[in-house]
Length: 293
Image (cartoon, rainbow, N blue to C red; front, side, top):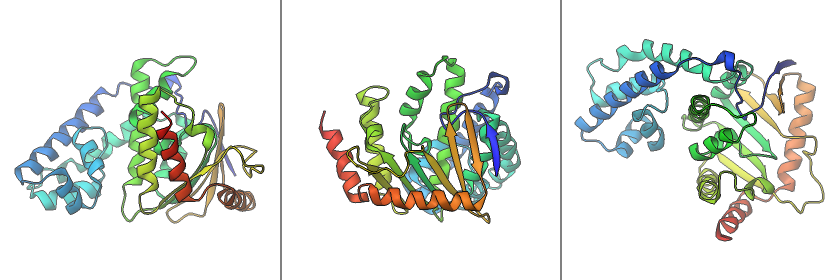
């Protein structure tokens, strides 16, 4: 069993881990502009290009805007599709360097889990108090970081938001990993950031719940039994590794590798899914909440 001290998926930051990210950001924007220019020269829309390289249109858009770090596989596929004459391939090493620098946007205690998450073949999450980081919209994430106490600087907020959005790249990889989430109904009824931000977040959850390979369930507040009363947790199976569990509370986090404990938490997750609404009922509830305003 491994234990890592620090904050939770909230992504709070320790000031001593921060550095100037402008150079990395400018570099990624430059790469994104190159890809966009080559794509447009080839006469391809983002949707057409995304289909040819095997990634989602939203990810291509984020890469072209410099908001996501392109993987080597994406650069190689883009090189072939766009006939870039080696222009994109030669940036691969620089991309890896930029990714290494960008990783400092995660607090030190969180980096180990973030690496496992990026390689996840299965990920199952119980969320009782907040929208899971992998499912947050950019506006929701910014609202969450902006309400931190003690308050975070604007630079730190933007770095944390960028890091959270970058983590979501795992949702776009293909072949897609197996994902499921059980979210407490109370989370869906708390309009963090205001209704405009919250309604967009709920619509994003509907899109996730309607995506193949992703299962979203809501645990209703009127249940008389609750298998996760001890708190939220994540079950994760990285590539070529056995399943692990990850828990966070306030300023502490813990990665659990002891298989007896992991099996117990797996059993709890199964029970919790049975106590929750079905995926179809869950999406209907989200739509109902959206219609209440």
